[in-house]
Length: 118
Image (cartoon, rainbow, N blue to C red; front, side):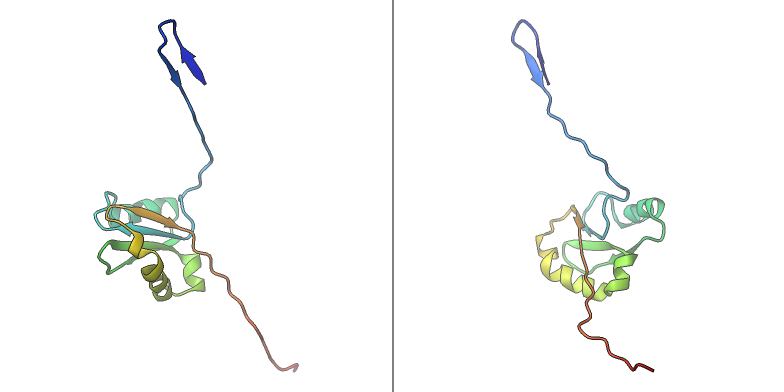
């Protein structure tokens, strides 16, 4: 959309919009140190948006303060294993003050299940 007047001044607008869901993430949120929101604020906010849906886990890392993990995800993979993966693959890329949303897909697979017919 453009508009203008006789002296050549004008404007241009470009816009996008989409539906969001609350909370704005599904699996994991990483909270870096020195983040303006802070662990307590984020915890209270998530408690209102998704009561009993997420677990706050404090992290001992130079740039990461905590992670917020879906309790559904924790049923599939332990918090320790999730932290191990994030520490290796994600935490090195996080800067102070950031909040990072992570899509973390877990697929459970059984190769062979055996039992008696009785």
